[in-house]
Length: 386
Image (cartoon, rainbow, N blue to C red; front, top):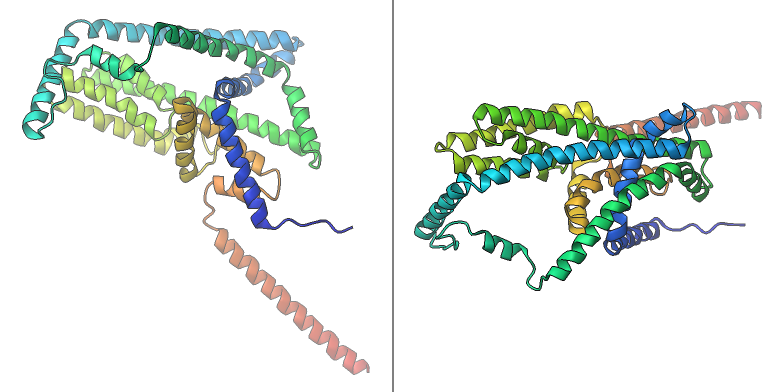
């Protein structure tokens, strides 16, 4: 019985439609998919610790609970540290710093009015009520604020629940995937799933190490320049580095603006910009390749487009989640020969591909020439025998 062969352009249309459906589902299911995806990545991060506890004959539910509580404790310590730094910054903002901000805003308004003919509306200084009015929705009400707060709290509560169940049922989900791809070898699929988990684990751990190193370097540089609240600005810039391309710029803007407002000399704000630029060159050229390595293995074009799509769909959270998601999608594309070209599209460029193709073509031509020579010899031998 002859099998119907689908043309390649039809397969391309199917895959494009699948991507459109996935993006549409991501937009519609944001409330559920975002905490589920975050929980999945955290569960992949904690799987190694759970396996280590289970090898010591500890039940899976107990090991999952222990790892989850330890993770919550670490996150709680980090959040408490961030809160203490923000609290100190806000206390300073309510003191003499507020007057400096107002005088700085008045000077900017005067300069724009005299040189550009623009009135920024800050002739009396920076008014917090106007900033709140810009951010707050026009039809906002206390009831809407309460419902929004409850919705945010429910999303936070969902995270540990999802993580706990994903740790418990991780083998069940792996078997489900092997049943979906039943035509593939089970051992190959399990190895591929393990590699996906290791890629996400290495990416998260590597990104965390890079963030901590950058936080220490940024803080040291700001302390050396005499910038107040150096720990707050340094840690914030290190954390924002998790957003590729955009994060480092956002991390440098706040200390630059703060130095511009609080220092009498322009040397300090420009020194902040130069120092942060050099630090990012160090991060991009040495730290990230050395620590994270080529685990994600995505080219810059796909990464940049992914950031734009993730930001448009899920905001800042989407920009953070899109990189490991694209890495997983690339691994899934490698499972089938029909989708392997798309896996190559996501990956790094192979500069030797054309050379390899030329070599293959040359070897094929040499093999054909040898076959022709052999055929000629055989024909000569046949003629002699006749």
